[in-house]
Image (cartoon, rainbow, N blue to C red; front, side, top):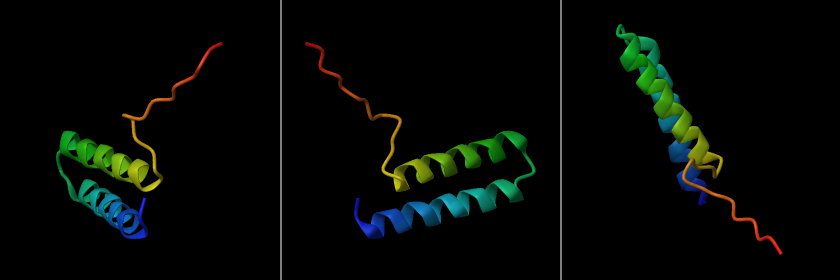
Length: 57
């Protein structure tokens, strides 16, 4: 992942956490926190869509 992408994802994660703190609705705050986690995973090069393939002999 390029450095600019990582910076972008970390900024988005930070902003989503800020928005979560400002929310009066718990469900909306939870959604913002979940988005923040996804951005952080992407920044770390992780994704829930990734799978590990193991060859068995």
